[in-house]
Image (cartoon, rainbow, N blue to C red; front, top):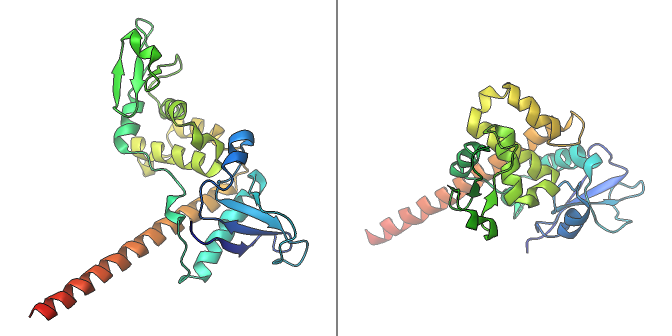
Length: 241
């Protein structure tokens, strides 16, 4: 388990302090039973006015803290670039493009019932699949749209629905893969954003900043590993010479 990272709130500096636990199971129970959790590894505590001292137990961040905790996390990482933050790159489960395109091609048929298997990316009309937990029956609302594909993914992988951050990311992945980043003005985008979160509009900027932070951290870590590897190989070459 990685060391937890604590950081101050930028929007409510005298009210809350936040913690990234680095463990995706920290608030899993609360997320599973109650939902509305930003992410299972992001918690908060009350500071009762002093901005730093913890006065209450650590609790999972909720809807109303969404923008604050993301912006505060981004600001902390920017101001502490050398701090090691383990687990930050695993806040989201990436969905393979093959899976996204497979789900987007599934549509309900009145003529014959169908079942789909996400792991194998296969469709079957054999009724025996109804008793196999690896297969799911194609619902009547499946129509080949992005919203439909996201819904089918939710039938199989329902964990992401309980965490707001993951829910947003899943919708973003599907829309970018199927229509491209530049085409987010497509009419389906409105259908997706209408139910992807119960948060106010200002969360969008926080989401973009947070995702950019993750990408930059991952790029930096890759660059460091590449540089270390190149330096190591150069040293071996000199020794061999």
